[in-house]
Image (cartoon, rainbow, N blue to C red):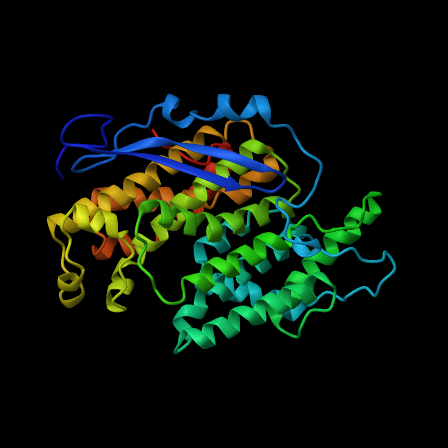
Length: 389
């Protein structure tokens, strides 16, 4: 592999300023990002001052606000107010087992991460991940976008019923309703309002973003790709943080950047599959910049210097986001660690991709890490989840 890396300036680099403004749970947080520049091969060291870029800009004018809807979408953005006295839903054992089996099969790395939550929180995490799998699988399981939209609408309607305490007889919906009910009962016992911490808005944002992607539109820019990752992977991480009661600006920032890295890495990891579907996941601005012919690649998916350069530029953005996420993880609540462990497999994939000279078609980078369970256990015990230098 050539010895080069991501550099900060120079005629051979194409410098790009990453920027994002992300809506997080209790306020509109501003999230400016570090600059990412691209050369030929390899990740360069990400310095601390790149990762800590927005501490000074956000801390002095943000404070922990009162719990409220992030933006005005009407009264249904949070779980509907319900009477304290209501019928208690029995634990849906079979529905929880269904979610566990689904996550183990379709999201094995997520299943491993869910094992590090306390026992009483595992059913909730499995239900959230199963919901994400249900949405993500719709595009590949329907014959046209109209049927896909009908499936998305089913989940919108089901969520309204779930938050109203009347879930449909669908395993994931039943597991989600049980998780929400447990939160409500726990808050009542603690003298709280009896509402679930998990926000309906994040569930529906996942649906909306997935629905817009049913027709396989190519991302025009890297910023669009990052927005998609934020709205899908980010919403899942925010729900997980809410489910364990974490209210932390640093955790929200870490989750936002980690979600972008996770989403980008997931799409690159599935690159061979997307090629067979005539689907280009690398943004158009990057394929054009590196003269990467999509038609030629669809006809004959083989590695070329243009594909390697384009892959490097996208992977570099993911690497920067992981490094930025790491910069926020120095003093997080212990409860947030199992949620953010999801970044460890992403870090491992990016490392394998770099060793493969940024060839997204290389068979060895698609394989599952046999020692991932041990790595997760060691990083969790160590308390340092990411090792980005």
